[in-house]
Amino acid sequence: MSSLSDRLTRGSASSPSQVDHARRLVADWQLLADLAFADLTLWVPLQDGAWWCVAQVRPLTAPTSQPEDLIGAEVSGAAAEQLAQAHREGRPVTEGDPDWSGANPRRREVIPVRHDGVVVAVLAKDTNLAATRAPSTLELTYLDIAADLSLMVAAGTFPPRMLEDAEMSPRVGDGLVRLDAAGRAVYASPNALSAYRRMGVVGDVVGSDLAAVTRRVSADRVAGEAVAASIAAAVAGRFPDPMDVENEAATMLVRALPLQAPGAEEGALVLVRDVTDVRRRDRALMTKDATIREIHHRVKNNLQTVAALLRLQARRMTEPAARAALEESVRRVASIAVVHETLAGSREDVVEVDDVLDQVLPMLGDVTSVGPAARIKRVGSIGELPAAAATPLVMAVTELLHNAAVHAFDAGAPGTIVLAAERDGHDLVVHVRDDGRGLPVGFDPAASTGLGLQIVRTLVTTELCGALEMGPPGDGGPGTEAVLTLPGAGRLRR
Image (cartoon, rainbow, N blue to C red; front, side, top):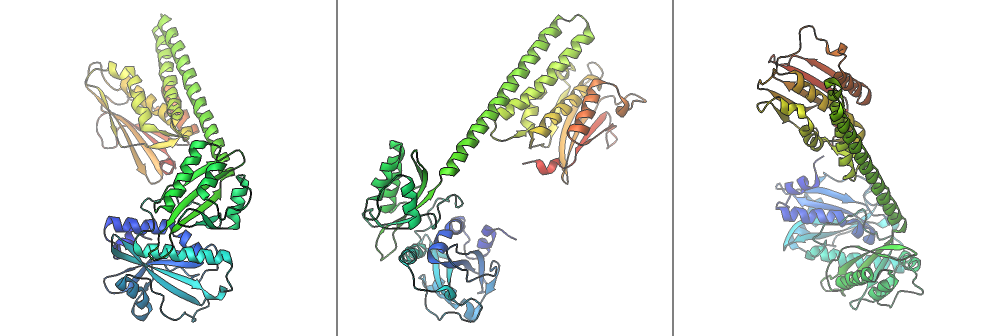
């Protein structure tokens, strides 16, 4: 199915700002649906005169009146007259008889969605009449606030211009406080009272200055002043960001919204959510994350120490073969240290393999010994992989590059080594190709006893569950090509 932006663009919302406004409304309209106890659908006109439904939300506070999925539905003629009237006249349309024809009788109100003076869509609000009963004080307050927000949608002052985290934002059921133009609470839902009780407020908050009450319960004076200022800003007609207020007993997320409907009494809506357990888990995760990154940092330091000790030992060796073996060990340990260094600076257990290779390649001292004409070219991107796959892959690739640099070229001869990565379905395929003299006659890579190739085969088959092939390049050119195929690794890339 196409995205909401695509569906909006097909209709009347053609400019980027109009599309963004409609998207912000959809991101925040669960609040309106819950307050109105109604289903909401967003409709845009098409060029042929029909109307197209581009988004839908159901209330969490009442039975739905639209159990079917309406996204993508088109209506025209008499069925679309109420939509067309609201769009044409630029005002909410409540005229018309209720629809008693279906299993869920409903009453519809259509609200124009205005942005910068232009009606870009219409919002249909359908109330399930089967659930109608004598409303309580809470329900009457909800409906009154919903009416104000609907008028703000029609005037283009709701939703706010910033797109907020709709999942984390407090819901109507979490706790609701209605403020008058002076910032005093005129109504507080039972859940809002409970949230303030957990924060240590004694008595009813109704009739009190909510900004002052919230400031007093904050353990941090600066944070308390900031939350109080955000509530005052909403009363003044601005849209502040949600903020936490915290003390030793609890943590409460506060979101304040202005109620500035044309012709209605001004005030503000304050939504509160008890997020004590959420914040505790967040702090625990942050502590765990910092501990893991510190472990990676210490492992990196220890590996660098091991590499330094091996390097010192290599300098003391008089036997060339022993010195070369120790120097290769230094390179291998250093490449693993680079992976842990990357993990120490990351907040996730993933590694940007291309960045690691950029740091590892200069460590291949044998590449530079081939001469200035020998160079490594990189084609494509490996991307991010989990640390469990990144470490053996980096080691295997560096071993193949090292082998190519040492064995592929005659002394002083120009040469190029190409490191290429590509996706084959869900598989990751890495090529290491040189344009050197090729494999010796009768050489069998699978039976080779060289330590480098043994390491590569072990890493690829056991750690990466992949396959290694070596031979002449597939296009028939000179040199040797090693191909690493890692099944499923393409799906792990981010």
